[in-house]
Image (cartoon, rainbow, N blue to C red; front, side, top):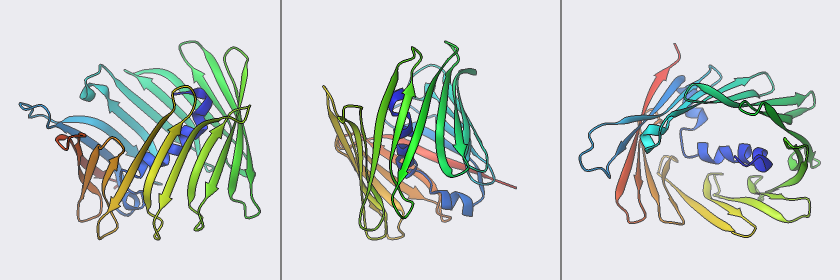
Length: 271
């Protein structure tokens, strides 16, 4: 992960979760574990599923553990993430590869700020740290307007970025972008919502010598559940649900409209 944009990436994590089970549904069904199985339809003789993603949730339905088996995607090894919380929020994230810790990130808070004012990324292999100090700015109503992140790298150099949030008339976050010390844009995320505050589109732009842009469109069924997504390179996903509202299957199609991968979800509940 690009250390300059660490906090930007943390905020964008919510967009990824929007394409999985809603936290309200997890809470309503008292879910303790979610197993995401993968079946590759693109392999004609394939008859086996693979446990791609295994998540564990505490009784407040916060993610505490995640294991991703890279072998399901044709790469060796597996990644594990362990998450720890206090009454403020996330305090420690530890990342392991094949059972060996590679790095961990600690989050520090103040009495008056619910978001972390300091993060320390510790790199186990080099025994060094990357420290990010963040200052938040809010409008008169207390809503986050922008924040400045100052990153101190391993070599002692510092990088300052400004992260600016903008909202639509209904109060939904519809733009989040990062600019550097020279006020040049680095990255931007943009969102569009319908009247019921459901996300219609999510766009991601990078600037610089090789600018990129991608956008994902969201459609919903009559029950208000996410029905399908399609992005700017014509990759499509279809979502199916159990009666309790939890996702049962996701079908993933390639740009030519051919079914490539199916994801199947299994759940365990808290006692």
